[in-house]
Length: 505
Image (cartoon, rainbow, N blue to C red; front, side):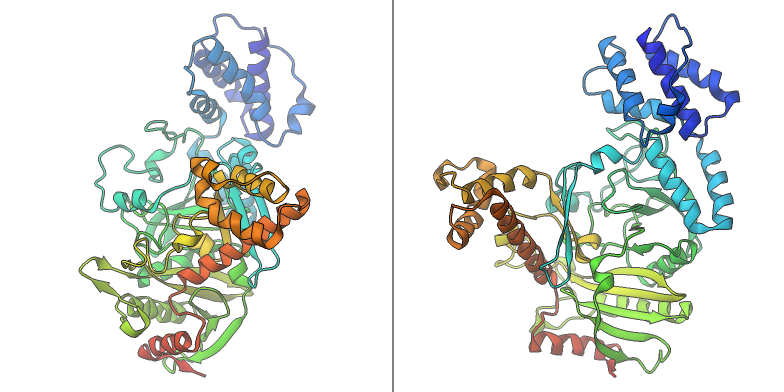
């Protein structure tokens, strides 16, 4: 029967790619047969060579999911759940994953993370097929060589939705989508049966590392506090980040600011993001050199970047952690009304820091992006948030990754930008006839038509629209900058640094 062959293909795939032991083969086969509610079964030979060459399990999973749907084993809408359950069944147990990872890590940290990453693709936790659908390009015309991704695998999040989750009491199991209890879990719309993670010790606390199922860059992953505790950034955060780069020196690691608007999408659970990627901000040169007499062995610079970034570098882990921690705490409480920097008011805390750590040639580098989420009547969504004229392209928070120059734009733009391109090639434009979700682009369309006309070739139109998106992304980063790139802005930045004992060299 076809289903019997499909089961055998999955079993062989698990033996070839997921380290299924011969002694476990019968048990796992019978578990899969039971999940599919198959009454009679015959073993068939399969094409082992073809299965060995597979890079992900799509081909072996699809017929099993289709069978389960056709036979009523699952209902429509449960396909992803069932696929995840199947892959969880044929994957190694969490303890087995950790044993292999630890053995590899003792030999070479990068090799251990490479193995776990490959395993997470092979067992379909990392959705390689979905990730490959994303559109990506380098904005070479931009000052910072920004990278732009149109994300076709995840929905757009709203700042107001994120803010509502802050302070929300844990009322279910697991308490949130990134808690350690998610391993193997399938409730509340989550798909974690095939999730596998490895434990970490950061700042003396129990944390763990897992890869992101919808990665934005190579080996994109999350370091997560084992305790369900709200996001925070304080001096202990710097220590944890530096502990991580000691454990995984090939990676960068960073923490979103712990406030709505300027933070990430999950503020209810303390976590970091990182991976095997050199982001545009990492490549930005130092702009102005400073010194702190209390820390003569830590290099201090303002970075030539869109945001207000302080870069510290030292071979001394303890000193750089202490120094960075003092800057973090100072910024939380720093107010300069002349520069529209309000640390806190009746609406709560506004100043926050996005810290990033990496290790280069044995030297620790800590970058501190200064953030502020104050709102005014003129900018109700945030003074240092995406301004209204650019929200047709991006309305979500500008978090860690985007502040470092890699934009994750909503999937709706893939379709919408093609329609914008069409107007530049001659399709008649009538603002009154725009679909509801295209009305947000009306100003941009008119701007492009004025600049390029409506006789562009398809290629010319595509380039024009991309260039506009690139420019918008640059402007968005300028919006998020708390100390503007003006004489007044540099003077204000200088005043803050002076307040913590840091002066121009």
